[in-house]
Image (cartoon, rainbow, N blue to C red; front, side, top):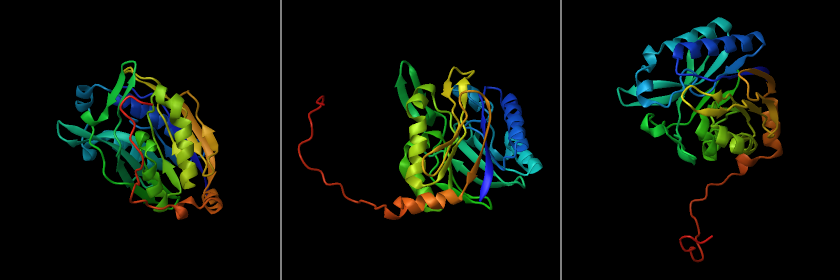
Length: 285
């Protein structure tokens, strides 16, 4: 029940071939370091906020050369590989899926997941994102039961929606993956807190490979790829630099954490909200 996890942290650009080469080199490095399960960040192959530029490069899943490369690499190295996400064409000329792929040691796709919660926010100081203009939201939670572990899939902004992770944990997830491209602003404020909270609430390991640094499209991401233990402790933190972070995890710790605090067993679904008192006037504190 013990194995080594490798997190790939990178600064993806607008050049898909370069990004595939960079990610592949880090995956090889992680495998050489003994990693059995390796995970890359959200938008591994393309970080570009220009919609026209993205649409000109993406392809349908069956035609995506990047995915073909990663499947072959997983098979060559005999590893379980999570490609945090790729932009996949689902509506020709219109919208894409932000899609994560879990690939087995035989190179076959074990599971895929489309990001459910899209990042439509205005952070202030002119920094805003409208992911829904380009991407189509997924509508399914996905858990993959593998020989290694039961793995619940999610992507980046999903981490702010705790119900998704409780659903995955109740379905048996021992590891929750959160590949991300968290902004510098939100990462400094919330990244560690949110990931530790999801681990504590579910008694699961959280594995979160991240984008880092100043990207070609002007975006700044926070880095700090994390592995968080089921008791909420930080097992590994990748800091700000590009590279590989390795850590050994023991799945027996999941059972121990859930036995100590059986929150999953104690959860209740509350159907009604009782509203009392007078609502505050607009503008009041």
